[in-house]
Image (spheres, rainbow, N blue to C red):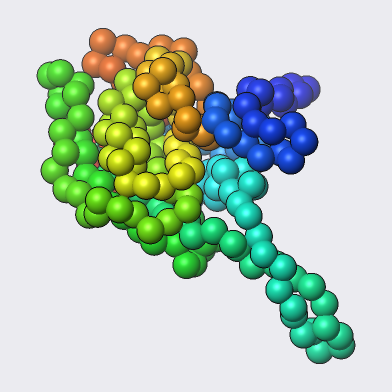
Length: 229
Ligand code: PRP
């Protein structure tokens, strides 16, 4: 039997548990089992979408662990008790297209979240990200921003999102990716050391076309059933 390994040690305040930055590779049996089916080339688009949603929820569970809550009074049918409500505003920043696959499950968990879209595609020749859509204002009135993109390959696309958010006044920025390459993690950590990165798996290799290997192929094409686009 393979025991789950511990995730990478994050940086943060050991007393309060508050996280500051670092890589959080979330090891969990549910993540591992869903991820194996997601990677499988024979998994069709309907199941692929569902798996992305499940993994997004499990990543979000970890990424929101340190959200601040405020105490509130709740009247149950039997008594008055203390409950809690979220004390921070959360923004979701999906990177189109593949990041769209993570939005709905996150909105189920965070129904009051604001969604700010960023459209990027990678030029096939250069592997450089090209921006084609931005619904992000100069100041984003949230306390915590979650960037959503299933794949972190070279880190170029995440870099554009992170640079945009650095100027937006958001204090806490977290990147949620299903699969990351080691190279992409290093790129983000060196340029945006303040970022928390939550991933299900880190793969070792980027091939000549800058695809993550073993990876899962092109997440956008598999979500939207556009093979070979
Ligand atoms: C893929 C993926 C990421 C990006 C990662 O998007 O969904 O957004 O590439 O690569 P990077 O870390 O090297 O920037 P793609 O360009 O295929 O667009 P799509 O989501 O519309 O398919």
